[in-house]
Length: 274
Picture (tube, rainbow, N blue to C red):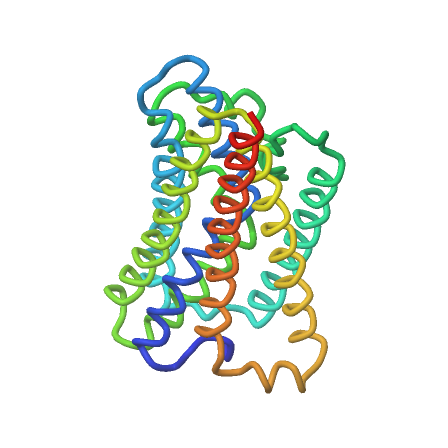
């Protein structure tokens, strides 16, 4: 677990940033997009809250894992392969997600809104059409039952116990959920606004965000693979985890602002021509 900071404040900041970044996972974006669109079409008032509900369900599993690992830490030591295996699984998923979302953007018609493409959601069948707040949260919890999420939650929970036990493990789990809740909640609100527009503004904004999600996924996957394969890269990046996490979140945030600005400029040009 050398990749995680050894100071509590730095570890807490990193876990919060990991939560923010996890909320931008393309699987999350695709699921929230589908759930929001489905419930908007049926006029359900909670449609705008699908992102937050999904995140709360997902977070419940993360917190449960943190608690379980914290309680078991005195009698169980994580195997050495857990961190490396979890990292490679994450790299594989990020690479695949980056590729399929890039293809979706490039293949879309000029005036078509590009929906995020996920992987996990394809295995949930009709659950992607959840029609109750509790069932949306259930979909989020099912998304948390993956090796990369479980291994990541277990690793930072184990690290937290070094600072004082179960309370610290729980605190990190809640910080992770808070970060995820922020990004998934905002994403749900943003998607509901795009659905309400369904015009060229939405088409431009969805393309910019699609390219941003794809590009960040591929870059993070490439950097993660380099760290695992090249000791020099791993040594150089050691201790910079918080900065890297902040950079990833900032890139997505800037992309969102760029998407809004380009969409507004295009709308302004069309208004002047009319």
